[in-house]
Amino acid sequence: MELRLNNLKKSFGSKVVLHDCSFVFEKGKIYGLLGRNGAGKTTLFNCLSDEIQPDSGAAMLWDGESEREIMPDEIGYVFSVPVLPDFLTGEEFVRFFMDINRDRIEPGTSAEAYFDLVQIDQEDRKKLIKGYSHGMKNKLQMICFMISRPPVILLDEPLTSLDVVVALEMKRLLRSMQKDHVIIFSTHILQLATDLCDEIVILSDGRLRQIDHEMLKQKDFEEQIIELLKDEESHG
Ligand SMILES: Nc1ncnc2c1ncn2[C@@H]1O[C@H](COP(=O)(O)OP(=O)(O)OP(=O)(O)O)[C@@H](O)[C@H]1O
Image 1 (cartoon, rainbow, N blue to C red):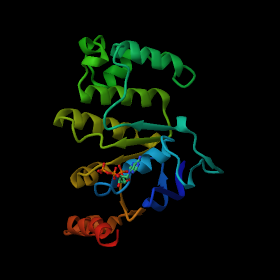
Image 2 (spheres, rainbow, N blue to C red):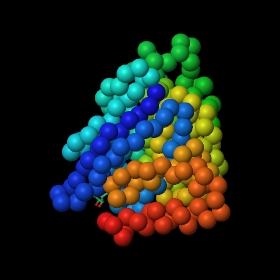
Image 3 (cartoon, rainbow, N blue to C red):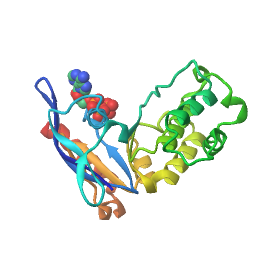
Image 4 (cartoon, rainbow, N blue to C red):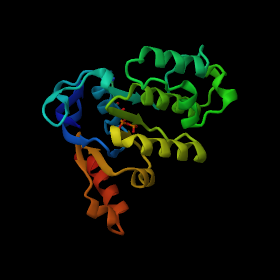
């Protein structure tokens, strides 16, 4: 399976944000999306997840035989600030989410098994989501994707505000899920991208380009990436 972006373009008024984004993301890989403030990372995610309409171009899903436009429910989007129903307990929410996705989950899978996987403890499962920390809300969103299993998972700056332990747990979770999904996450932290991601993709001048693996092996790769990111300023 591949997510194929074909000539995506998006402008706001006279500001061209996505110039001509074409790229192929493969299943089984975690992609780190790097770009400077205002480069258009969130705009790209919003176009993919149907939050906003691109001006032209399309996001397609290739299943190995044919290509078709991706449907909104095939994209899981983890917002930097998670959006969840505050008035339910974690357990109520997960049971509800399992119920509406009952045709997608393996029979016999329990809500407890999901909580165990993401390490939300017994006591917290019974608390209102309103009282959950940011990291716990992120974990709940990950449970949603384990249940609904969208082929593409987008994470907008997911780990930046998590403590070291939760960030490590989330990394472990992403690694355990990666083989069945295309996972793309945006980050400003170069170290995180090189540490967790299989590929690094740069968004600058409204275009996407993949960083060559050879470059990542070079001693001065950080400087090279910074130069590539700076390019936007000199051209844009
Ligand atoms: N709804 C909108 N209306 C007008 N301009 C917008 C809108 N959404 C985004 N923009 C502009 O598009 C550009 C890209 O913004 P976007 O939020 O996608 O960048 P980003 O790479 O996610 O930035 P950051 O890393 O700072 O979060 C910015 O100049 C922003 O002001």
